[in-house]
Image (tube, rainbow, N blue to C red; front, top):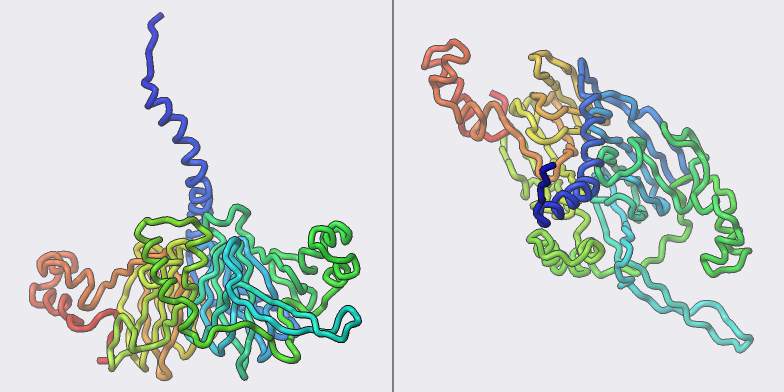
Length: 460
């Protein structure tokens, strides 16, 4: 019997390949199959929130996760309103996400394992030892940041976050949770793991039962031992709490804060982002400690495309906010003047999840079969998914149209049919003439009809 020898290097390679694919591919393949099965869309419509979860200090409104268009995109969307003086209690999710601040401002914290507790303060608290002297009390915590209207905030999977409305008006946000992300090793159900509070007030979200926070599940004695506190204190932590996931802070939240929004080492953050993006890896914890988590996209002076007669568009990708590279998400903000038109376009490598922040528009979406899967009005508070490669065209109504779009790729690439950077502009005239059975003169008019405008067009 003939025998064959296999080079040692090839054997090592064959052994390594399964490990590599186990580390990277199964999660991605699972998510791809899930999306593929749900994207045979016959019709899509503007969505409103379907489920409400009321709390002492606000309300969470969930868009129906069973909607086929949301299942196609592999996402869940939540709109939250927090009262002035309200605190969203610490929690974490099984999936990464992005939050856009529609209205209001506040303070937030994202707790990253291994990051230093760089904010410290020293106070005097109470009198101890019967000596009539105040005992020193020291607090220290990880850095916090201010946010305001127009900010996009990145939230990685599994990291605890909290926020507080320190303004004088309600804080309104819209959040996308990417349940199809490879970071989610569970199923497609969005899960919020609460460290405090409850879901016992109002209607619980679909796919999740009502109940208390996770620390209530543990044996009290074991929890007290793990936390290093008396059992009486552990019992207080575990007592029933009907306030929900957002609670009122009666005398304001006492926090250690930097002097301004721009302080706190933002230059160091940018330097770390640059080095991390260039491949000089310093470990996940160190990189995330230094990353910026927010970027404002509501300033027309910083727009990527600006048309004084039509409106403006700002894009936010991993080039501007490098942490998006880890989340595999991006966003854009658009404002259209009355009767302006958004060029017919598609996204080459992502789904678009569009939320209307103000105004109304007529929106049409075409599928690969050349049929309109959506043709109707989209108005403030509604949500629409435009699947990858489906072509959409938008015309603002008399009051104008404003929106924010979440994209399921950190470097989403759009392609327009009309305008200065369009596919028509890039085609030879004779190709256009033969494609549409036009004369060369007609083809020339079609090619250069919007030759000086990019993506957003003024009313003719």
